[in-house]
Length: 191
Image (cartoon, rainbow, N blue to C red; front, side, top):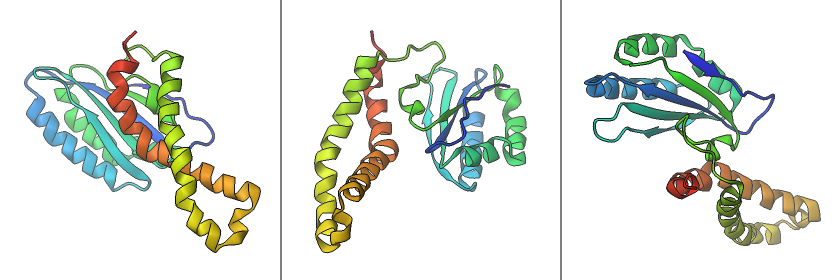
């Protein structure tokens, strides 16, 4: 197994990106195994979901992103006996060794799923990020406004902005950007 680790001291969320190339004819067994390992990962603390990019018809390459609340939660799953046993069970169906990458924070948004894919040019990353954040900076303060009115202490200059900023960032990281980046992926990776 080839593992590249980009772990830092602290992060907001962590993603294990896994690439499996299965042997021809192994789709059904692999899909059954995939359901088992997803269920097992879901029982671990900090698990926040899984995204699967399945191969096109007759394809063999699966990309799986397993999200956790933090690096420690992701490490705990990655190094668990349960994962090790499940990997041993599927190993005969894999055409090559598993590729596993650790991505923290927002790195996952703009990191292409295939190792041969190109990283999007910066202006496209900027445009997508601006398109996501701009409407949120208009909407989120309006959503907080009733609470700011009800609790005057929250209107303190730095506190008010901090609450709005934290809400925008949480929405971008966990709710809005993952599906937007997925939808925009063909455009992002086209030169």
